[in-house]
Image (cartoon, rainbow, N blue to C red; front, side, top):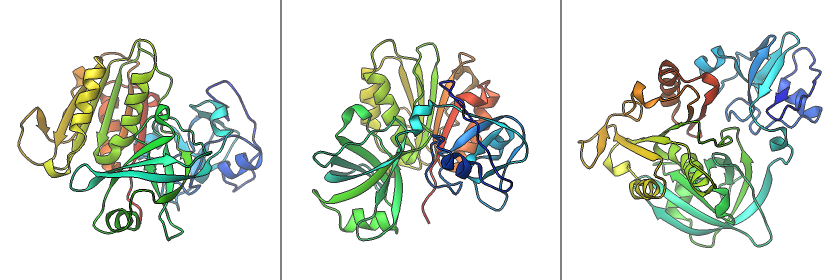
Length: 334
């Protein structure tokens, strides 16, 4: 197991044993969370050997990602001596997730079905994350948790912001819509996920694609880039919602284009009429091959699985290297 800081671990894996289970038992700092193939935190790249994912378990990896050598360690087994690459620093997994208490500062309705949840850490507690990662929030009065990406940046701590889609029915949706109030206490755990902003270089143009509340981790990334010293990379963000009643954060994105001269945004709606620079279609239809201006372009994608799969294929067709495409699928909880 090789990490981006050149730290290498050799792991003995028994026949039929899951790779992640073996690695954790041998103190290898692999990022993980669900251990069932759904969250994608333990994603890695097969550099050599034969490692296959179990066919009897659903996986968040797309077929195209698996064909490109990506694997989820939690549901993978080794059939030969193998080499797995993890594209993050080995220190990332050494800390492990923590549990903290936060208090609700405000709940703001941004559209017909999206709210902004602002919380603040309890006194004496701390929580750390990288832009793009997610946390688990326990639904009050239950033992159930829901996963949401932070839309604020680490520099905003001890305040944390989430963008949450409110469903017609659902444990968290019902709580927020019917019960939640300012100063309520929430228990959160994190941070989780291998979808996070990599080292920023002004030489590498960025393309970001977000569907609906998939904008949350992208907002965290944008604000982290904005607050970082030095020359900023060129960034193209394509963001889309279903229709005008579900559209949100237009003003917030306009602010960021004012603050960041290297940022350009394209906003699209699947339904409606083109007006005020709104494009009719989905976020992918707003992109063209000419938007890729360099072979080392980096992409960050967040949204529903269908969008992520299509975006992967499209961006690779535009010339992006598969290893430069980072994605997070938003899947509704059962």
